[in-house]
Image (tube, rainbow, N blue to C red):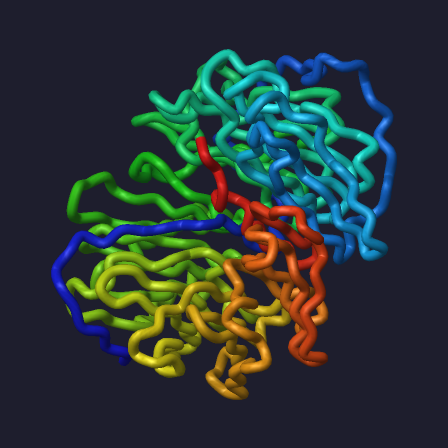
Length: 484
């Protein structure tokens, strides 16, 4: 077991980006005691502009998207940098100081959705542009209270679920919208008896399908509902056994986590939604948990250990235990890799480190072991094939296999070439990085080819706030620069 030593403190979870999971999962027939629900909606054209005929402009492929300041007022826009050096603006001109809060590329790589105060100052709404910038429109319904706080794409890139919140009283509702802005409908639930039930788990798209799924209920009844957004048909509506309020559906839609409420002690349960069987998987001090990308495993972290629970074989495996107080948080940014075979995460607290942990219980690897004692890891990213990790300190850039082999210190990169953040390109040989250019005093976008040992500037002298690559599907811009 991997031991880490430290001081007593309340642990905290820090999260830089949220990633969805993969996996399949189809609908099942309602039980004989189920209600036939109706999703109440009022369809409307979300944007004030006339209906737009969407043009299929092809995928972004490897062309990076950058977020940058568009003028001296500080207003932002999203640009696409093409391989031939052409730069395309994908957003309309922002008003004075207009800001973009979150960006997500569609799974098919042909559209980009983002939150911005593009139309009304300091009111964040949901917009979508296509890959050549010829269409840019608002898809969210009129906002009466609060901003749009988050959103997600369906697997086929045709629908978006978004959440509206007040910022004071919390989330006020979830909506389903077509990508082209033709309609936006609030997701609600009413039983055949006309009873409205509150949401206990917000609607989520089920990976491997285009359906969305949610949990509703009250003190006397809880129900799991799955809906086809194309037809609006509710084809799964089953009553769940009595559970504690609240819940989190796995990315593949097969399992539900519920938990008891409490300030210090907590019980955690997993329900198999195919047979409505529930098992307690944890009891003790409060934990943070995070579903795997495939959706059948969940990582549990508290101030003393990291454990994996496998919902399919109903087994728990402790991967690491910590001596009390040294660790007060781990980062779930880009957490699961190699078909859930490895966890890669940063720690916070007195021990700040980067670790790769095999989920089969093999020995974890501490990346600080490869650096001088005085250095701190400033950035890391795992390649899209899940084999290589690039990591940096203030003076060097290194690459290594996740099993600790093939460590290489890329001394041909000078300190002034250091990365402030970046991600692997799909060739798994190059990294696209934002780095500080001492000549222009700006953060610029650069391609680092580790095989050819070359640096290629992509953004010229344009300052880059954040960037994305479609094929890598790693939403680093999400929650990275949200300044609200």
